[in-house]
Amino acid sequence: MTRAARPQIIGHRGASGWRPEHTREAYELAFALGADLVEPDLVATRDGVLVIRHENEISGTTDVASHPELAHLRTAKEIEGRRQEGWFTEDLSWAQLQTLRAVERLPRLRPASTAFDGRSPILRLEELLALVDEWSARQDRPIGVVAEIKHADYFDSIGLPLDELAAPILGAWAAADPARLIVESFEQTVLERLRERGLPGRRVYLVEDSGSPADLRARHGRAALPYAAHLTDAGLARLAATLDGVSVAKPLLVSEGPDGVRTGDLVDRIHRAGLEAYLWTLRPENRFLLPSFRRGRSPREHGDWMGEFQLVMRTGLDGVFLDHPDLGVAARAALAERAE
Image 1 (cartoon, rainbow, N blue to C red):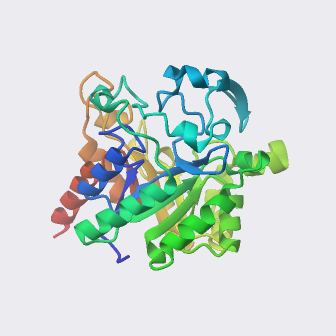
Image 2 (image 1 turned 45 degrees about the vertical axis):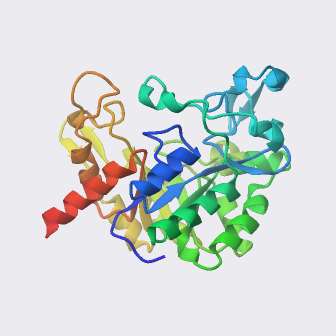
């Protein structure tokens, strides 16, 4: 995979701002709109099939509640310290999941996307990888994948180790061109295991703007190292010993206070540590924009997304995750024109 313009545009769950996330339609639209890479979230079924869903609890992203034959599988669980109720991928077989259809996760914010509810089945990892290859050939350009391993410590605890399930599939796909693959997780433990398994490609550590990683909490309880400690110079140096990049939540990079909007030096420090720097997630709706970039009163209206996106991109990031990859492509192009 050749080096693309910076920052690389990563279709967050496909083009999830325009179509229900993680569907074939969302991914194909992301390719058509110029995304350099796309991001699937990986969770497992009861029988060990890797499927692409934002969370293992699927009542908000599928029509599972309308399937009476699956009503008995509704349950409550505590995952990473948070109680959840609904239907979970690890309680359903792949055959059962194939009967479901995807729905828009944010219907009030993105009502136009609900027109596509009920049309798309859930994808397996292998199906998406085949789709990436198809569109790479069609567009004569290498399209990459940023595979997020979700809730790895939890899945370990129920006998479904995601690294063991993912490594052979991703490894076979990336063998010919390892630069096409990035694997990311909020848990460093699973990234280390994938490294030990010889998985090609890059490994990127996801960082929240508060709290501590689930794998460290499981191991150390309240003494777990918080995410913030990983972003000190010493913490970044530790990560650089075994990982290739860091992907941070937007509030860690850009914020707004009485003195205006600030971006700080985080990207520079990540780069000085020898790591790549990524950010999640840029979205154009007022609900997600910093106050200075909001326009109008409705949270679903698009504000001055161009202004905020360009502010973020000027920090020198290697890649940005966006629900609307076409808007990222437009912001990057406008910055390039200005620089000429």
